[in-house]
Structures are given as C-alpha cells and as structure tokens.
Image: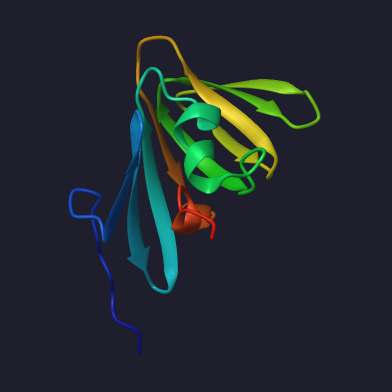
Length: 121
C-alpha cells in the first residue's frame, strides 16, 4: 500500500533563482510540480537564456496561471497572451515575458521545471 504524501510550496524541495524570478520545485510520488514566480522585467530571453544558452526555451509547459499576464511568442512567430485563471500548454520553442506591473505566477504540472534554468554543459 502506498503512503499519502503532502507537501507545500512554503517548504519546496528546491528553489532555483534567476534575474527577476524563481522556480520552486516540489517532488512528490516520483513527479515534480513547479511554481514559477516571474517579476515585472522578467523575460526568458534576458533572464534565462544566458543560463541555458539555447536559442529559445526548449522545455514544454503544461501550466495553470495563478496571477499576472504573460506574452508568449513561439519560434514560428505566433503570439499568445496568457492571463490569470487560464490553463495553457506551451510546446518547446518559445520566448515569454511579463506584461505590466504585476508578477506572473504559474504552477507547472508537466515536470519540465525539473530542468528549468539549469546550465547546459
């Protein structure tokens, strides 16, 4: 019989920071749930790209946006605006940034935050 696991983002298993934001990871039952908090001024291209050194974000995200507004531009040029209360799937190959003066907060269920903002080497 499996045991019940309960964890909280107030005590994440790992916190990874980058300019204008952070990722908090909770590992549970063999999976990872991540919370990203991106402050005004955050943009993937300027906050995370210098760390990972890829052309665009190469991770897919399946997420629920708790607050804020985020603009996403895919490598194919298509643009999307994601707002608080929306569930989104972002395939790999994108840039994104915070719109306005409110921080963006998302919960990612895909597990892709396991490797978010890690240096490639």
